[in-house]
Image 1 (cartoon, rainbow, N blue to C red):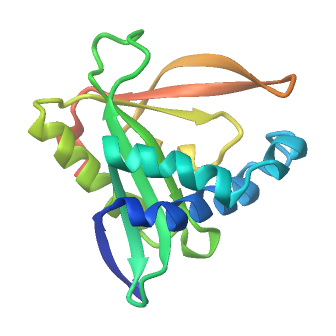
Image 2: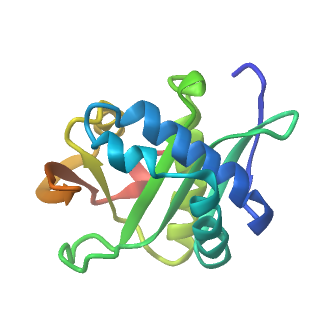
Length: 173
């Protein structure tokens, strides 16, 4: 794992680090997928306030190096759309800085979200991933099944989001 020491539940003070990971990883992951104009207007500052609110209300976990730099995070909770009654939980996000991807961090960040869902007696989960985002292979490798495709629009560009589902999250970890 190299220098990664710690996965822990986030606190509001982590909002700055989480915002940086989100913005930086959007800019590397979604270049040529999401319009530049949209990516360029994403700032650390605008996201930091959002994450302060989210961290106070939702399950957010961070991965940090042993010198305290946040390099990834995960966020999840109850399923938000209500469209998939069979699935009670949802992984809202996992983002990892590009230089730290493909080292097993994704799975480590997924585990505490699943644990939180299990504590609420939630054993099924969805995740939405842009079709052009190659990280969807990560979910497929963990047994996620494609259950739907949803069209979204960002600054006039139509994009497909794939909805993946796990009927039993206990099978993941």
